[in-house]
Length: 292
Image (cartoon, rainbow, N blue to C red; front, side, top):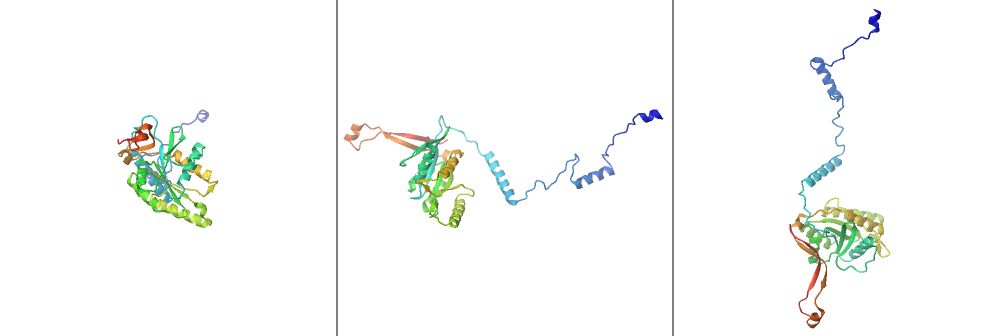
């Protein structure tokens, strides 16, 4: 009697029934509690969308990622140093195109530009150059600018709103592959009433999104400081241009073009002096994009 009490009694471990009435009863109780057989709880509403706006945004983002994955990979045919990133500044007369180019050049080079003549190329990074081109207001110049523009800055007079030149250039861009477009509102210092300024900004932003697409970037140049745009606003625009990614357009890959940066007349002076209508010899500097 004493020996049996000192020894420990061995008991069999409890084994849950795998079949039968008790097993079915236990499984049904776990389903009601939302617990699986491994002991983890599963709530079917835990990962549902609480907002329809968020659900729509995530759905469109997933569709964009899928389309980006299905996009045909582009082959880089550039040899050596890549061409500069061409930024075309377009707008109606007296909207501030030349002044904006001068301010951007001042930001990148720390040098004052007295006059804007032809394309201006600046270095914005270790392996990135940006070329600013002022788009003329004639239809032929707009067509030429739309063919080689990687980014189009559409300057809009805030006091006047959208003008005919802006709509014409947008239609031309749509025909020529439609590169990236950003809007820049100028002459906002003419508004004295803050409420009217805020309302005008919202109206122009909504109209800009309707004409191009929803969510397109729009910058505001609120005024002038010593004849230049404010440094902080120019800095924000320049940073956005510097980090912007460039995706080659399929339309541009199939349509070759030549962008002449500058040219030199190498005709002998005595021949040109003797005959002003003689054949001239010129050298063109620029870039040639051939069809792939």
